[in-house]
Image (cartoon, rainbow over all chains, first blue to last red; front, side):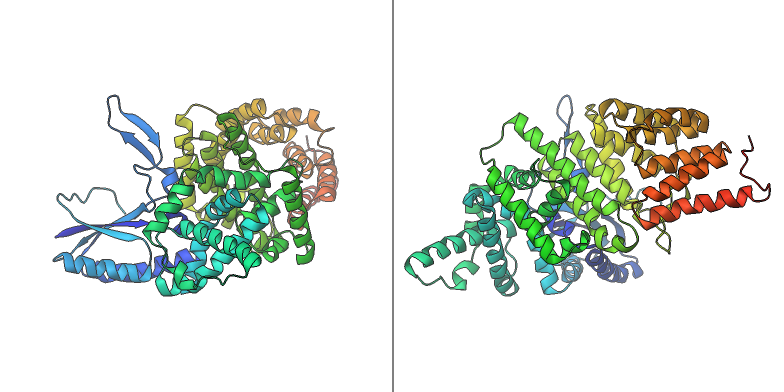
Length: 122
Length: 424
């Protein structure tokens, strides 16, 4: 079963990391990811640019273009993973491991209904 | 990350909102800062045990306010302070309260905090020092280091700036649309000053000042999050990101300046470039051009060129032309001339900058650029004179070293022919 792990965190907080702190977190996360990758169970991983670079298209008639992210929340969607896990417990375990090296915020674990690997080379 | 580094990051990110709200509450900068400091001390005691609150800024505002009020009461009646447990349990109820009290205002709180630092009576360096101290929360020691002055001198400078700001009176009324726009533009200018203070560093000052660039970017993003639909704030943020993206390539191993054409473009930070390009794209959609957007668009054209010869100089010439109309300045014209030299040749460029001479007679870059144009035209003797003048006006050793390199090349080139006689 494929799960999407949506990463929410306070953007101000993550933005306050020094470059070194940021690099340490990314390095630790990559160790956790590598374990799944080696088993061929790690799908696309994305870290999104700050919400200040976001634009929202409201599908009204006519569609409305708004600056900023879809929702104003205390914690923002900052990235996501797609992973192949047997069940929710396994997906939660992976999320716990990620959380252990990158504390704070929350992960939303959502089963994937339709998955298309896409055609963009990494 | 260690526990304390984690808390430090949380305190830093909550600072502008918390100090801004406390300032509105106490209407006194020193009291607000002290209240925030006290709240931070409590946070350092409480958060490691209880975990960080869901909304650190709200926690710090509530605790800072309570501690300060208790302080006043204690002085009055010698009442005992409440135990730490009493304030460690700030949960969603407090959160909601702080939200109700401060959420609706926090945008103007942060803007006010930034705005009081750009008081027109304060010289630029004091505006920067004040903002770094109050808004960013850098220590006096860190700021002193960036400005190459002693800690005591910087402390005094900041104290004086604060007194000046307090004397001038602070704008606590909720700003109207026009005032808000004015504040926003003053604050944007100050953020750009902070950035340039870091960007213009070289050699010995490089390490100490480089963090100023990152701090400026952080403040620009903060401002943009508060004012999401302001194209000029998008432009400013894009400009800072696109310039800072080149930082790893701007100096060689010896600390000498590397010009754009000679930079190793593989060292440019692609993530920052992507963010900058995304922001300038967003800004352009609004069709309300402004100086930051135009400068960012110029930086974007450089960023988009994989090789120097891919640079779209025609477009850059046009953009500088637009900037000359918005913000007429001999320095803008000088920059435009560089683009003109690439499009129409050094002769045309030289004609363009000749009238600027009287106004830029003490400007290092004027003579550096003039010398370069003359050199391209093989007017080597005149070039040498211009370069000599540039060296005399150099602000940093890196600038001087760069010009000396041109001079050496001139001497080398003219040596075989045995004279400085122009070849043309």
